Image (cartoon, rainbow, N blue to C red; front, side):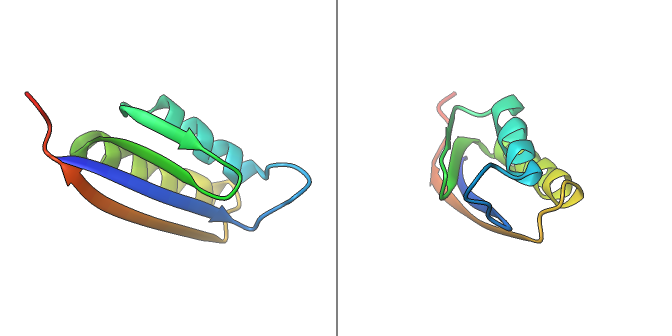
Amino acid sequence: MRLRVEFTTEPFDLDEPPAHALVARQVVEAAELDSVDVGPFGNTAEGGADGVLTAVDALLRKTLEAGATRISLQVNVVGEDEQ
């Protein structure tokens, strides 16, 4: 199964990325995912279910530790893995 996760972390800082946003970027870029799109108003990553779910777990834990006070996320099934 393939999944797509879309997420944001708060609080926002318009002057420079807060620590929790930088941690979120590091987590998804280091994860075993097929695609990652990091933007100023939202982030998207896609891959196999195991990779996405592992990344979501790390994302929640590490961004909260780094000071996030709110994390919004949505996970969608986007298809089946081709094997």
